[in-house]
Image (cartoon, rainbow, N blue to C red; front, top):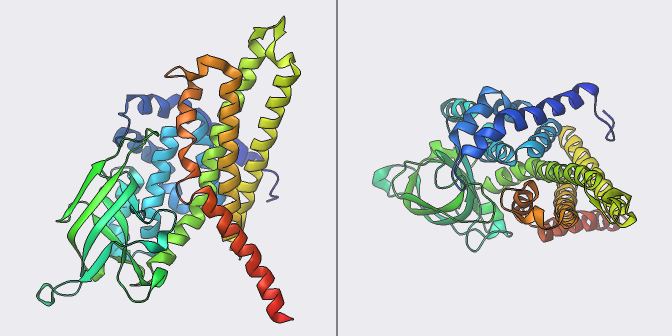
Length: 382
């Protein structure tokens, strides 16, 4: 598939998802409580088969799905994405028994997943995490006890299980981290919600000697950082797709508003300052979309430069969405700041993606590292 176009079937599917988001999912989202997991919304995503697609579709289809849902209902998009983020390590690195136990509930929307990587002192620098996995007492059999805290965890504290990354100490830095599947009812595990700008559920988790066994390990002991990075390389372009969906929604609202709103003797769209602004918004949105699609295609093809492409897609798309939504608010004027207006909602939603799953500064660091790694390789071979 050319990176610059979609097949007719893909275009039709995106249109269908936009319609579903606005017609069926948005009413469920509006009934939800901000900051809480919306289980009826998750169930609807399961009934529509969209949660299952998280684990059967490629990266490009994931991006198309996230962009289309975001255009019509950001809450539905986020609920879907958080299920994928929390359960992808299980799908990719879990044992058959682990997958049989948990994935059916995730796919139907009955079981809520969370991805617990960030900590108070380890957000952007994920390899610096300090959640400690101490060997369990010999009398308890093989295993560990988790002690520490996770912070800014989406779906916490309501998730039914968490993918938790802890330091088991096989080696220093990233090489001493292990991924665990931790059910929410484990003794010593508690949580509290956080009141954040974005309305989706997010909280903190405290681990007070939480018991985990070898049966809870995702992948291999000491290889958890690879599990985390594999997940982020897939989801970073799709965060960009989420951003593109919000940018497109803001652009569409602006085109409609500036075509209908009259000022200074005619519609706003006839003012050059306005028409040039909308042209810039549209150009940046399309450029971001193409970069996201290219990164997703690279992931699906198993290309070696996926980390760089993923970082570029997330960086450019999220920064673009911030610009487009802000410009849309400016062109709408005070009405866009009124609680309940689409742009007021998007203005709150659009800020967080520039931070989570690696802030924009982190993405620039990844891109630069990949670029200079290529130069060092060339110098070495001379």
